[in-house]
Length: 368
Figure 1 (cartoon, rainbow, N blue to C red):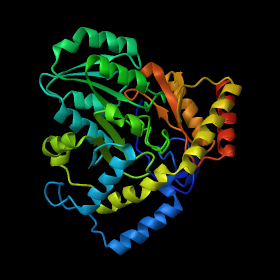
Figure 2 (figure 1 turned 60 degrees about the horizontal axis):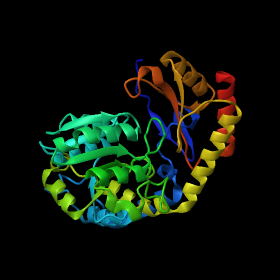
Figure 3 (figure 1 turned 90 degrees about the vertical axis):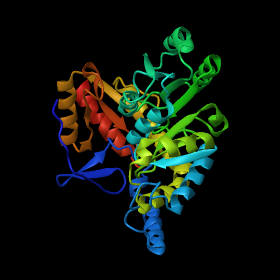
Figure 4 (figure 1 turned 60 degrees about the vertical axis):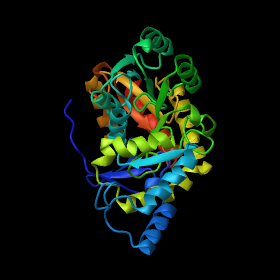
């Protein structure tokens, strides 16, 4: 299926505008609604004016781009995740590529979930070691591979997402911790879609109490933060290694100061329970209504995919939903296998019960 870019204007709450038409947006990663949150916007504009921030960072972090606000944010992020240290990078895609390239040596092996994000799979093509793929969330398969191959490598990494972006399902962190201990591995967890959504303070599926069991935790600001950028939570030793060896950091202009300011000021709102409570109320409502209409769906989280298998059928249903005022996008190959084409419903704290009920009513007329 051919895809095209569509300029979109985000408006307040859960709506967007495309070609002059307003839609209820069910395709956004803005899970807490912070991208358009008036109080945060006001705070950012006021602080930016007071600080007189430059428009850009003017260089990589090892040249002129390592301004003080980045260090302030990194201190806050380490406290947020309960880690020794944190390091800010530019995008989630860049982060996964550059970390794997820097951390995996020629005598090392990586064991990665088959459903991992494309950024990780692309990063694995650049490592000096070897990698094995285990069936999605199949811990028995992972254990079998580790039993067969652990002794082949000096260091071994288990790499997983905590919440998988296309299936909306969640890893069993306790099982991962157990396998890490049993086989003496390192653990790399991408928390991009879990931050702000899971955890007492929105810290993700890796709780602050268990942070020490993870060697790498990747986070992004493009989801719950409603902003842009990425970071890794890790040990001080790992941070020092990455500063010196992570090519994505070494050879990229640092984030603009204004973006870093947004990320710094958004963090307390990410931790605030009121947005998370609204989001999970919406999740429970949507799942209850879908079950009542016998509409099958996937997911254990705020990401709720409905698989239609046929790309053509998926495209037709998405188009009809758009015509009815719902910004719902089809997901095709290569993002997912062709026979698992789907509509990915992504919930936000800003959706209203009436938004959700109207969507399910329309879906019911198309599916049943």
